[in-house]
Length: 139
Image (cartoon, rainbow, N blue to C red; front, side):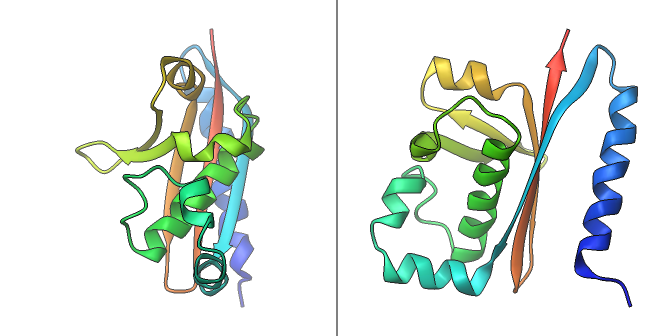
């Protein structure tokens, strides 16, 4: 029987191999985070200050599954070497293109210039949320 992390390992190595095909881009770092949905719900309920501290106001109205996935994305962003202080998570928003592709955006020009080098993929189930962030070196 496959362990839950084996599919993540395959995805991780596939992404690393695909990095060689990016024109003028190399993968500089990878960050990944998994969030347990039940634990996240408990955290949000137990500590009401958690929401405004870590989420952009436009994100705070979303359901808990989506919030857990976005929190995983922000944690993965930090793990991938984003030079933004984790205390500024609320200024970073996870948004989606018209095609449903997630991306990071900030409410300041400085944040947006730092976030443009990061690619994100997000998923969640009833049990957990996962995000992987890739930092690209742009030549």
